[in-house]
Image (cartoon, rainbow, N blue to C red; front, side, top):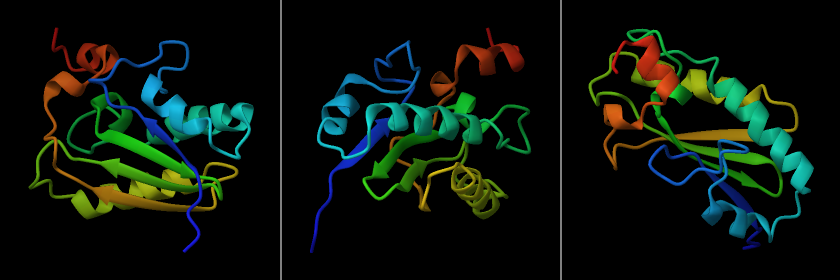
Length: 142
């Protein structure tokens, strides 16, 4: 089995996120050093993936899945396969299967992405603390 280096882009709102990219915490950049993807391309993929995630909205909440903090981790392989760990605001969400497909289709639309896998996880559980300030403002939760 051939194991390739991977770039892990952890966008957890609870981590110390690099404000210049709003995406790559220090832990992820250590992994990216072993990647065959050029830094500029990884930065472009990061920006494009964020934009794609921001196009997917929770139908019950007028905020996108990225700003809600539902995207926990994005892992990009050297072959440009993308693996996403995401959660839902509630395990019993009626559109759980649909939302996973929406996120998968959005990520797959990014130029340069070869394949996408979305994993629905519930640990750690989502809390409103994961929302961005933009989401809190939209929902009047200040």
